[in-house]
Length: 368
Image 1: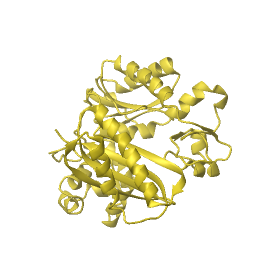
Image 2: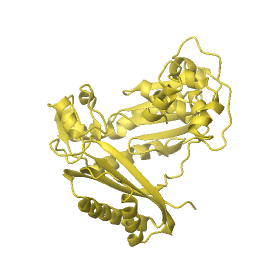
Image 3: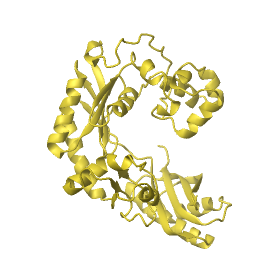
Image 4: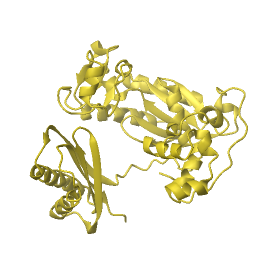
């Protein structure tokens, strides 16, 4: 999300003669490193089953590509066939019929992730965990590449897993640098190298810019990161709003004012989704399932202890059209009956009565 009240900084005009300039040759001393475990879930499964090394491995759902479910991750060998995260398992099976399909084992991945994050916390750095397989580190060092290599060695020593490390002057630089370093590499981006590296790339190469935003930017004649960096933030504010518009320009200029923090992540809400093996064709079934899912979400909210202030319902129709609606609650609550009633009220805003393949309910917490 864009930083609140962020100012606008000038784009660095100098570009080094070589893109691979060692970071320690600059005058920066506090660096941000982004650690990303390569093909994490698939890699954990290969560690458990060494005979799968070098084979296309797909992890998702209950491991049965004949059933509905999506790919959680795919090994690099499977990715060569066009298999990727979020793809239906059936599509993955068509693209890579020889792949080994495995069910998701959350407990196993969480256990390995805990070892990795514990290893990172032993370093003299601020560590911000971003998920099972990635974290940011902020460290005072005059040789961040040496630190990155140390991180890779420690992770490999404790878990036998490989990771890629991106280095930058801020989180944005580091996050994008990781992509350049994959697999199992180290890459540095600075304010000097940013224009040459990112300028020619499409806008959705930026962390935080999705396909929908990229299409809207393209409609305004803004197709590359360089185009966006040179755009008038006031003009973009007209199309994207007074916060998002200027933030997009900052993003394209490589500016990120967010800080690496060791504070634990606090979820903004709880949600559940269910994919049905057979489409729901009767709206009474849809209502019953939304009520059931809402009760599960209510249990999560009650266990968290914070009241919900908004309910969102998601419906994915067959074959793959998705729609969401949400509404604020009259007053924050943890009461299961009120949360279920609110979810059913939101459901009434869906006018299509086509067959349904997926339903989701999310409760967002009221702001303190």
